[in-house]
Length: 87
Image (cartoon, rainbow, N blue to C red; front, side, top):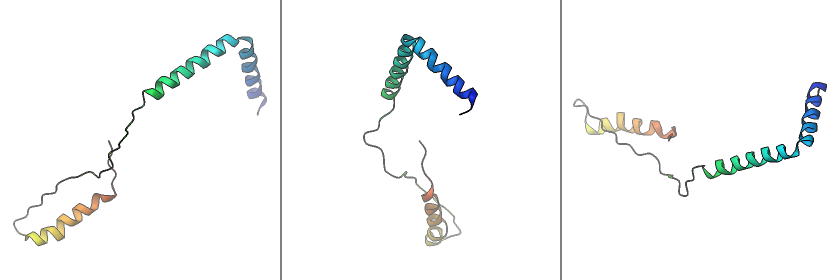
């Protein structure tokens, strides 16, 4: 610790001991704020673990159904599997 920071800490401790009622009020207020903030946190007892579902419709009159599925639909369906949904 440098001398400036130790002097600051010493001054803070001396002022805290000089005004104990102010310290109690500040600590009580911070604790009350913490309790109220904790109670306001959103809770989800049963989180939704299902993967997002989406429909993919691919149409091309120049390709057969098998060509569309193997060449376009399957690669498009497997590409976003590494993505994570944001809510």
